[in-house]
Each structure stands twice: as C-alpha cells, then as structure tokens.
Image (cartoon, rainbow, N blue to C red; front, side, top):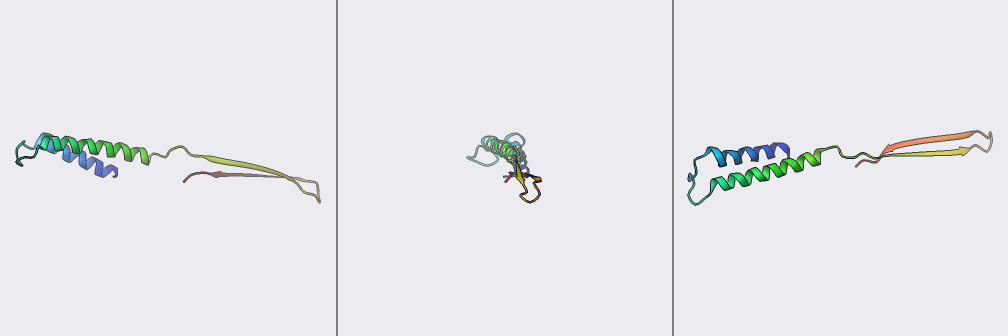
Length: 85
C-alpha cells in the first residue's frame, strides 16, 4: 500500500463516518466501516512512510598496504564502498 492509496482510504472512511447520513444502506453500520477504513489507511500510511525512509546506510572501508619487492616502495590502497541493498 502506497501513500496515495492510504490517503484515499482515509478520505473514503471519513466520508462514510461523517458525511453520509447513517442508514443509507440497510443492515450496514456505515460509521463503523468508515472508522475501520480510516484506521487501515492510517496504518498503511505509517507503514509506507517507514518503508520509504532511507534507513541507516553502511559504508565499508578497507586499507591494504604492500611493499613492492623490486623497488622497496610502499603501496597503499584505500577502498570504500556502500553496503546498501
């Protein structure tokens, strides 16, 4: 469920709960259905915002040092990469 569909469910639930006259459909409690739709919309909105957040990024750094046997020169290699998904 994305942010748009969550907001849509909240809006439909609010319309059913507060804007439409109760008893329009017999044997159906429109107010309760409206509150249920709003609750599902809020839960979906929170879940989609949590899943869409960037989260904690991981950065891995490696350093290697080698001495060249011919020249005796020290060679240092630094490597960094992101450990994301």
